[in-house]
Amino acid sequence: MSTIAHRHIDVDGLNVFYREAGPADAPKLLLLHGFPSSSHMFRDLIPLLADRFHIVAPDLPGFGLSDMPGRDSFAYTFENIAGVIDRFTEMIGFDRYAVYVFDYGAPTGFRLALKHPERITAIVSQNGNAYEEGLSDGWNPIRAYWQEQTQANRDALRPFLTKETTKWQYTQGVHDESAVSPDGYSLDDYYMSRPGAHEVQLDLFGDYRSNVALYPAFQAYFREHQPKFLVVWGKNDPFFMPLGAEAFKRDIPHADVRFFDTGHFALETHAAQIAAAINKFLAD
Image 1 (spheres, rainbow, N blue to C red):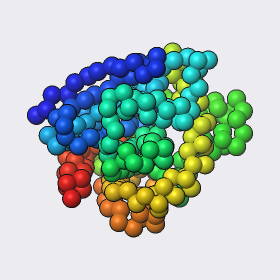
Image 2 (cartoon, one colour; image 1 turned 135 degrees about the vertical axis):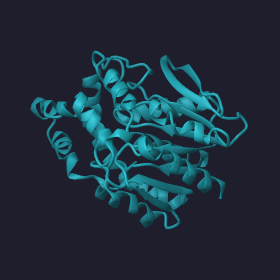
Image 3 (cartoon, rainbow, N blue to C red; image 1 turned 30 degrees about the vertical axis):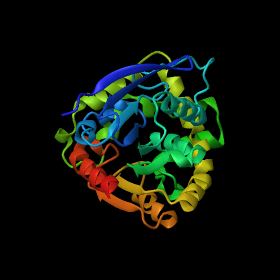
Image 4 (tube, one colour; image 1 turned 90 degrees about the horizontal axis):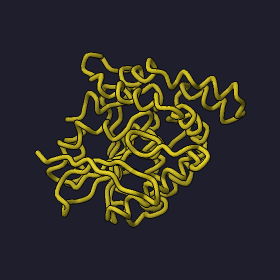
């Protein structure tokens, strides 16, 4: 089993924490987590892939052990987050890499692909959406905030940030809740409880509309570049629907789309199956 190193790097004044494993000369794989998680979500996946890939999994700015600068000095937008991760990849020497995107990691990773299509060797999307039909009605309160950014609409989103909702995101759609380790959602709640973290997340809820606005650009990238593309989707996800997974084949006919009978955080229950799919897909 490959040792997982836990590292920090200064990215233009912002401390980014990341996990690294695998041979330095192996094909590169970038893992991008989502809300409200961190690179900790890949704790089970990394050991299953590290014999074949040089893996790096950063914590996005404002998440996990990476810096969460004040909102007066860092605007929490997906464009800015993608900019930090883009610079991060350059600093660690990730010049050509496959990218695994999940939830917030999808609009981050797809922005990197738009900017540097020549660097992307393959994409694995695990409940990482790029089509409006993939957005469930669970987004309606957030859509209301996009349309009218009032304090009332912002405050209406605070229940998304509670301990109970974080646990629900992990367990909804999972047949056996006891299969989901409490470590993931407990750690997420710990990070979410830091002073200022709720306002950061509310800013990102508001800015998520910028990702939806970019869906046509993401789709154009898919059509033009036809990247090697694997979809591994928890089909019971309450936020990102199976229609969003199937939609990738509209623009990438050769995309490999696979569904797993689990929820949003599919790695909590199906890490071994997803790792097997990735190993076969990237080896072909």
